[in-house]
Image (cartoon, rainbow, N blue to C red; front, side, top):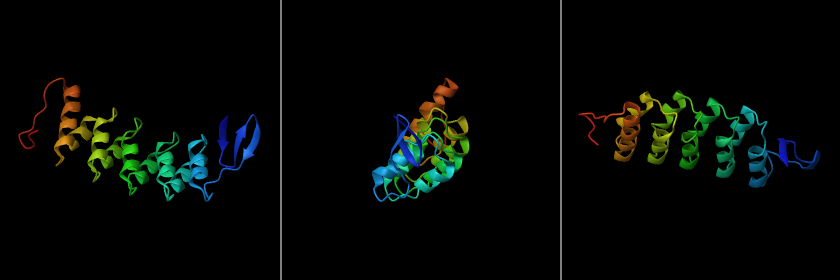
Length: 156
């Protein structure tokens, strides 16, 4: 079974039912995004406006998500959606820099622990007010530098 378009769920070449981003039930809207390998940037952006957090998560995690989708997801009111974006291994540095300044500590830590976090992103995190974020940044920077990293301005 594979989902091929927003118009329908295909099983053995037969349309079984219509999946619609405007369906009144959140499960159908979730499926319309999560199972749609051909979802466009505009469909993902529209899904990020959905009232249901599961649909917004599906859009943030989607394989076709672009930098515009990630940036919009990072403004989501639900911190778990923003954390989902911060954990993506394919983020650009520009998106990482937004995530590293999120008001939620969990989102910032997820960005620091992201394997794609650059030295620049980690250096920004090193200046964070939260001790957990600074410690996570210190640990990642040690991996980069293979030696301890310390700052007289921000003791850890």
